[in-house]
Image 1 (cartoon, rainbow, N blue to C red):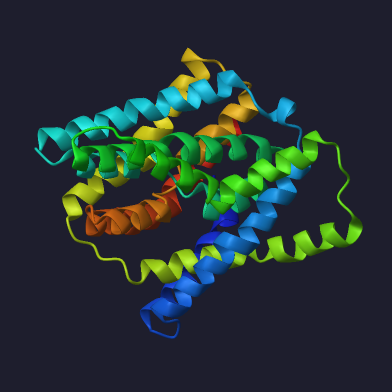
Image 2 (cartoon, helix red, strand yellow):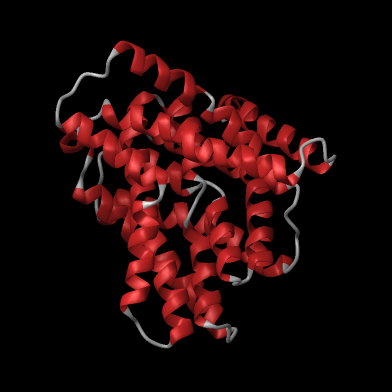
Length: 310
């Protein structure tokens, strides 16, 4: 367990460095936004394309895996939604809280960290988790927020969802990578080197950007943020573990990667959506901050457990 903790420290050390840079204003909010945009649209896109182009979709995609992750995530999503509605918050706010409870920072933190800690064969399972998060839960929150405001489902809602999916560079890069793989096209040497150099900037850039963005996050609504962080860091991986190991038995290694991915802290893109729609952004901000700090310990514990079990 100590060995796993020590291996995760460099990742969280980069986050801490970014936090220091943002907190001291050495790195302004504008600089953080620019770095995040570079990572999101260029470096991470290159990394995901290169990963997926070297995978076979038929070898990676597994309905049992998808079903197990969906079931475990849906249970916690419904619990978080029910708790929110019992507090009599609007449907849009309940959807945002549920998103915090199940959507982890797989793209910026999970892909580089889990692949390094659990081996290159973790790429396939991590990509499947990321795809489910983006395609299903990413669509669901937009439908619930916009549908809740309008009081009904309309064609405009589904147009918004569709445009959001096809304009997301992570979805596009994964899709193009699998298309490239399916066509069995070799990646030319210069192109592969280009992708390696650009993709190599994704890990340090993403981690630094996470930390710098946390510097501007507030810790308001601590009790709710604590509950959502507990859902994300404890209940979510627990439910996914029961689903993947008991209810829908998944191959042990793939199950361990899925559980580790479920243990990641709240994703930053939940804040982007909350801010865009004006729905509880400070609540999401506090949840990201609290879950990221707590994950320094919890992620190491979960990875240590699944590695030992595997």
